[in-house]
Image (cartoon, rainbow over all chains, first blue to last red; front, side, top):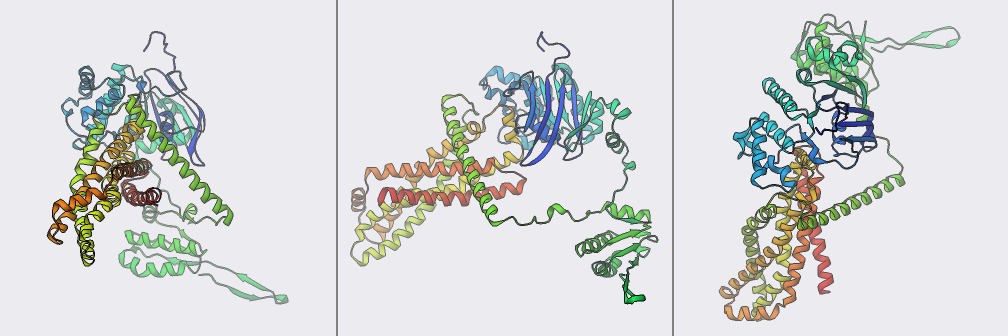
Length: 258
Length: 373
């Protein structure tokens, strides 16, 4: 964090974002703010627009309208200020884990170089993957792939980390370890984190504020406690069903007569 | 069962009275019921409005649930209604757990638009595809320039790696196939020429055919199948596994990072492979000339060198480089525009091979018309 920043400086600001594919509108004017060191969770049912929002923020899709400012700039994204952890890690399969972690430094023109390699090795050790330097992604388990991808996402010391469903496909224990690692990294690196997830345990462990999307609009923006206390029914239902699957009401499209 | 009672009344007016039939479900909805009564239920439901009485159901088999849902689908298709009356909790739970839902209206074919509109939309689609292809070609050239000027970086020795994978490792198959085809062509042509006492011209024919046509074209066809498909498969699988998106978020320009090394490797390696393939074909002709037609190697080479001009080698180089650029363009474009899962990777690979061979042959015809007409 630079000395000129105050606690209220906004790391990421999305205002009135409208986006979609072809003629289909997915996001219908969504706004989001992320503060320094904050962990923000985007959640909602399938098809509500979480991934579309993330792709638009990351510049992978062009928004229809609205503004996206990362570190106060709405121009081209400064790639060194962001890190992204994709759902399956998205490591380049033809490169070793070490080469993958060094990749951002190669693109910056500072690798291969001894110093760059040390930075990459340190990041890999930080996510407890130091032993995997020479392994290929195909030789790693799902959890290891995600940790290696996390090391790659952090190798440039970004200010904000985006994670797309980090717990997807992981067993509860590995998922918890990854959550704890994210918390640890947030504290040690002063990161802001934007997290897309469905996992209630992860949300409870990590989320400082949540943004609940439904059919392309923000249904709720606030803390988890606020959501449970006076959030909209749909948001409460979401958490209630997640908490106790026995509460799930069977739904049927049948017409029932008395 | 839909019953139509005709009730005579004053003034000879007819009153239609409809009632809906009930269909009682037995306590045990097992496999036997599904295979026997399930079919009858479906048949009835497609003819008339039915109410299923499910108050006694105590056991529900998976296949029975399927049979009941199938009956409702057929009923809906025929404009009939199938509903449930007082179902037990078990029946309701089982139906809900395996509910395919009503017919999705979105999947129904949309009404056909007017002919002129369809023609216009098709033309617009073709135009847009060409514009996008043009943009991709432009990006490819800029990617190459960025790679040379060092504005964009790629993995060190990426082009060398591609040269090995796309070029060097293709050498054995290219030489083997062109050698075998050379042998076959020389055998057939040698027999015909021998009948007219013109065996010596086998060298001329083999030289001209392989340097000008067979060598570059056959090499391009082999590389479209081997290297083109390899490029598409690799890029398409990177695309569907979000590796390309990950590179973009790291600031990598895909044209420089992924496309340029492959384009460069193919443009460098294909002319070399085509020249070696042509030489291999010509040497296969020599084998036939010596052992079948009884010519001496000295005379074969003397006639060969008289037939081939320096510009033929230049055109071989030029044609092969253009074929390489076409194949690399198509392979990268198709690979990077892949969407979907692993099946999309297979489809993209097939598309590259077909498109690569098609456009290579078109380009070859254009070269033939321009150079030799």
